[in-house]
Amino acid sequence: AGLRQRTPSTALMAARARTGQVGAGSDVIGGPYHTVWYDRHMTTRDRWLNEGMAVLAEQGARGVRVDRIAARLSLTKGSFHHHFDGIADYHRALWARYESDSMDAIRRAVTAVSDLPPERALMELPAHVVFDPRIEAAMRGWAFENDEASAVQRRVDAARLDALISLWQQILPGSGRARIAALVPHLLMIGASVALPRPTKTDMQEVFSLLATLVPSVH
Image (cartoon, rainbow, N blue to C red):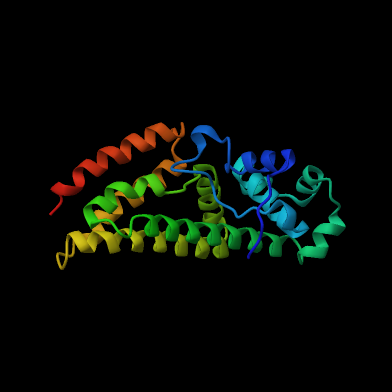
């Protein structure tokens, strides 16, 4: 039942590494940047989107150019126009991919700690967070330049903050402080995405471990 996942090819493994999915070392916080990969069933449109996300991580929004991505994929511009109605449509598809992956990551992280007591859930949550600061920084930069990208980033940020508030409301019921408490890790992650030099995965894990020890004292 369902799709049968194959052992990925060498080329696919290289693409995953470029997007931070595997072998990305300290660039990825809490786990790899997530996209569902099925080598056998990947469409050409998926290849365009996957490579676009890889370029976004490596070079930022200015690097997302059809000619460069076509060369990386050994595809033609005709292939691009078969799947996308111009560069604006491609940008929207990349934003939709980012939003979908981000929302999936939130759901997976919340599900992973849903059976724990709220204090323990907050302490364990960072271990389940998937966060690629390269993608985050690129998307936030894009959001400052484009209203549609800004709307996407606002929805992602709102969903992340809502998930944190929901956990804190179980610890601080009726106090009105849940949102303020939730803003601490939320703003920390935003800051980490644009900090230079970029914090390493180990740095961020240690920061969140320190924050976790403070959870029982916030009442």
